[in-house]
Image 1: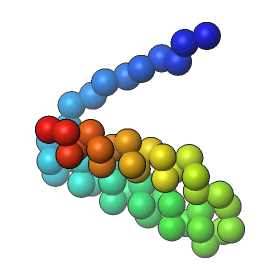
Image 2: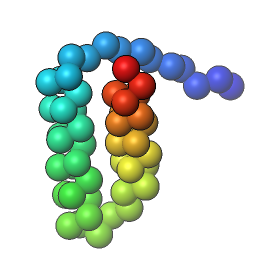
Image 3: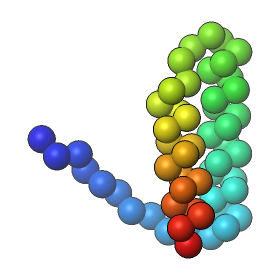
Image 4: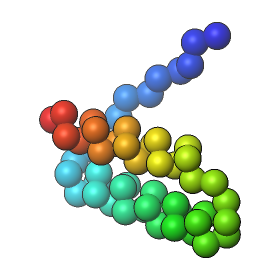
Length: 53
């Protein structure tokens, strides 16, 4: 089964806001001793897309 892909357009400000929010979520997971691998992958995907522009 193929995964569904969603494409969205964000301004630079919105990208920064999104990345900062995800980093805060990651930090909360770390404080709780929970795994962050999936969040790390998401952060890298967003940063790589921003750099491609």
